[in-house]
Image (cartoon, helix red, strand yellow):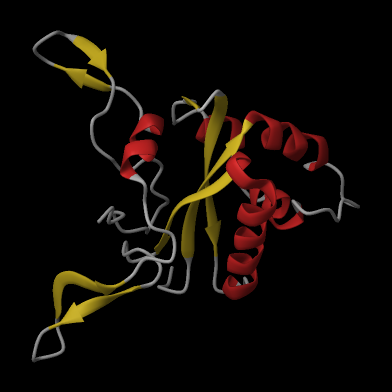
Length: 172
């Protein structure tokens, strides 16, 4: 896997999810959701992977989170344009929750290098899709609390569904 691969998390309302379901098996579909439908068609086990996250209600709408993987053969600029168009056209029913290169850094950032050209572990630049941690944490699966011996809501962002060979995502 290479650094030219990208992982994008998208949040969609139930309204948009129903539209996706209506078109996911239609090979002739060419509507506004075409790139999203194509991306979801490639997910290996969409039912299982979509259930890894919670489905929070935000501002009266229930949302689902999906993790899309794009590779070297995909036109990443065209995908970004399509995601931006969906964000503009669908408003609060669709958002990009985050985007990462395969090496774990957020899309739009670069590794900071020391005087020898080695990575310092820090990044520079501005993420293309800034993470709204307050909203995104609502999707995180519950965590086990040893003190109460029960599951409690997550209070921080965690990696969910890392694909083989993918580095841990950086949330800052």
